[in-house]
Amino acid sequence: MAREVNLVLPPGLAISQTAPYKWRDRGMVPRAPHDQAVCEVLSRAVGIAVTYEQLWGRMGSQRGAKVLSARLLTDPWTADTAQIALREAGLQVAPVRLTDLFRGDELARSALQWSAPPPPVTGGTGALAVTEEQVADLRRSCQGKRRLAGSCGGGLVLEPARAELAMVGKLLELGDYAARPELGRRLYAVAGRLARLVGWAGADLGQEAAAQRAYVAALRAAHVAGEPALAVSVVGSLAVQLAYHGSGRGLDPAELLATALAAAEANLTPSQLARQLGRLALAHARNGDRAAAERAAAQAFAVLPADGDRAGLAGLVGGARLFLDEPEQARPLLAEAVAGVATARARALLLVRLAESHRRAGDREQADEAVRRARALAAGMQSGLVARVLRELEGARPAGSGRAR
Image (cartoon, rainbow, N blue to C red; front, side):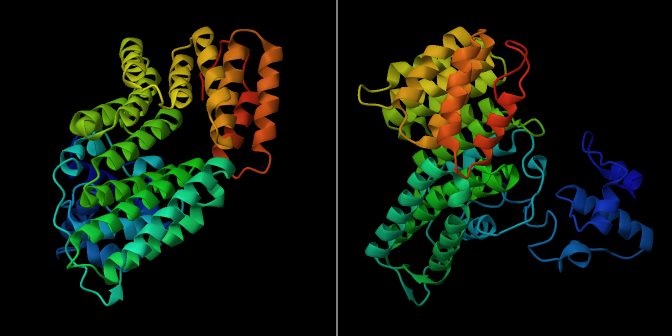
């Protein structure tokens, strides 16, 4: 089966010899174009047409990789497909691999879609009443969960956020807002923010592929809502996730975010632009591109307004300096960020990176003090990422021999 499938696949997409066992015995489902290649091979073998529905259509959304729609990025960017993506993002699914979802520049190319003018708000002819007060309440609830996650970690809010996303999805599906399309757009904006939170919390627990699925749902909802600034913030969050957790099959976080900024930079406030440029500096540094990282960092500080979040930007640029193996330059930036960032989870991560900068510079005492402070903040915190970077720092090699995480 594997040999026959590889004969009909484009170059570079060959499957392993064990892939058919996973489809047959482990409930996994191939994504495009492998799914259609399997149908073609089996059709030739048995002499009748074999369809995707016959092979996998009855497995349901809780099996294998079926929940990862191969058309998640390529389906038309409409209100209807946004609702489908939001439903998928709200599902409680089995873990999948990071590389099961995006490859190469798929997501970067989608910026041409989500940065376009928003589509019509279709539907909204249901029986459920939707009011301005309800939408305002939902937005406040999302903001509260986001603040809670910043203090206590994504594990505390992931399931409540998923449940609330499912609730908003039902309002979009069954609500009565056809005569008030602007109200419908505001409801999509709330859904986009909830999906972004679900993605952020999933990434905080190490569920990278599920997080990416939620981020795409947030992009689609932001597109319908007519909020490109929300979409850019989603791409920025994903770029940071990729910078620290790897880029999958050729998915470049710097290219991804640079494409998003080129498409929608005019829609950002100076503070928003500075934050995304800081994230771009981090992504370029992750790729080892010193010149591009320094250029993005300089632009970020140049556009940051006087009342902007300088501490948050210093943390991003300090992380970039660590990726570039410049602990001496990273240390004052990270110290500034630790002193100015308010949320406990972000401060714990910054302390870990500050400890790494001290350790690489040979200052073990200062490194140990930063780790002690990070551990005190992390006590009881439901963040898989904070726990992991603390473990990694404890097992780190001597100064200068490892990369920042």
